Image (cartoon, rainbow, N blue to C red):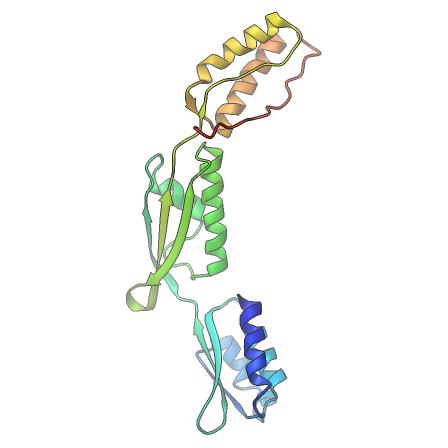
Length: 230
């Protein structure tokens, strides 16, 4: 988004003459850097305006940055600083608690709103659902205006159906061992598939191998196939 916006603005600027630039909405730090810097007092070339925009985008402290020309012929760079998160709304969670989902968001009320971090939050929640058997879960995160110039983070979860473990097939030439390990797996069948349950089953099977002195035996895999009707 940043690269595309910068490229479009540069094309627009190249058709304009050089004018002085004024700034609006900058943070105190950036205001000191730009507004009070003699380097930016005089007329600015399109390349310099584009450089300023890129630098401001890279600070990640702004929701939006745009440039326009005033009636007096000045460039005006207008920045909107990131708002604070005033509220986090979560809906659609059925199999877990809202607090568990919020734990994976890793953002809280009072934090500065940063869209890149929200993208990462959505990915973490998606991974959490996948690891717990909800392979089709869909996570959407949107922001909307809140009170007193804050932002509301709206998290919508569509869990979809869970993946159920229906069969465990042991591949070995030792039929007795295969039968015993498949017997161990039975208590895990018809349960929601998850990484943790798979680890539990692995551990129980390895314990059986150890106790029964299958010292050279090694569990590998599993190779997992998923039915469309899961």
